Image (cartoon, rainbow, N blue to C red; front, side):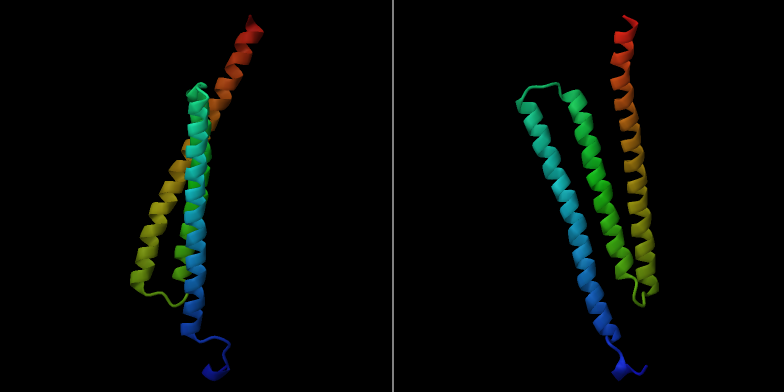
Length: 134
């Protein structure tokens, strides 16, 4: 089709994608913020009840880690979408660097979450074994 018959021009597409990117990045930031507020509130209420913080602390960290991983995924999605329309080599290079950093963060967060979860499960199984052996 010719330029006059197109639904959106390239500049129109860029503008729409710009709005979408802002929305996706805002969602990612909101997820991270909500996770931080939730984790702080849970930590504060646990501390006020003067319960043992060790086991609860690990659960809070795991939950916060999940929020961080999800928020980072949204941020990466926004970066990919930003470079979707006629990217320059500079934009591609920036996306590659950002994607590498965020992917590495996600990898290490996910690995730490899995290790913490395994430790918590082992700690929960250990008292049951001691009780059964007694």
